[in-house]
Image 1: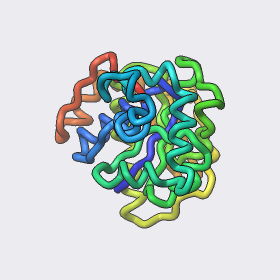
Image 2 (image 1 turned 60 degrees about the vertical axis):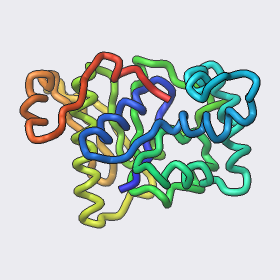
Image 3 (image 1 turned 45 degrees about the horizontal axis):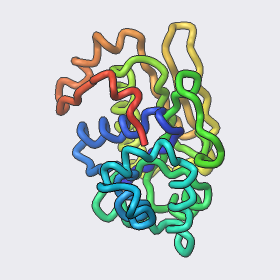
Length: 225
């Protein structure tokens, strides 16, 4: 299973990747850490002492990172994706349209994490993709435990669909609505529906009683590439 998780900065992409990886034994290394080591550090040797320092400063240079990764992928739009997927099951944070279209065939599913309205969107200088590019949308507008529930529910549906060898939708016409019952619903043409109850905090222990534990610190909702 190879997953691509996309979305704007600080919308919770890394959090979703970590939840899925830890709960379902998938391999995940933050893609930005790999990009820092393989792409950015060689270009900025005198600026950072360590790869970690370079990685942690990425938020101040998103447009520059976008251009550097685009240059790295100039001959093969999927170059970085192929490198990451050699040892990982999840790729977090494609932002370039060219990279996305050149590597989409390498993924079983594309997930979009959406915190629009709670966190500002990025400029088009560093983000060219939208929720319409994804197969599944995970809302991240409420509490951390609800993101945990939504991410695991999404992964279960993805596995079910992939195992049944159902076709991936060529385009995703997503809707995110607040039902009269107070449930948050996200749907795609493929039939994916995430229902997050306001009472999920009380139900989450039962939901995950047979699964490995995942920490649900408040930082889950805001960490990101």
